Length: 127
Image (cartoon, rainbow, N blue to C red):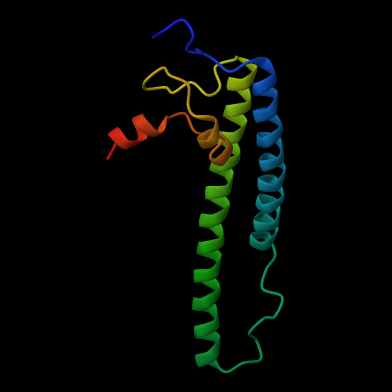
């Protein structure tokens, strides 16, 4: 590694990434809240007045929809956790350093996937 090769992002660059992450975190938390609210609200339409066959179909559909919403909420929670971990790495000044190669992850990749801990090089090795 040459002396001119950066080993970490500057404080100003870290602040740029922090702003990107905080905005993504705000949006992710809003979406998670909406998904959580959807899960906590019971079916307001009800199926009490419909015939048994239709009630069974609607119940099955509602169950599938609830499972999908649960999966989306779990995925969103994991995304939030990953973004929060990225904020910790910014505070520690270790943000943007590939956990496999020890090299800086490209800015373009971090802007697209701000919670990543792997460079493209390391990610490609996984396949």
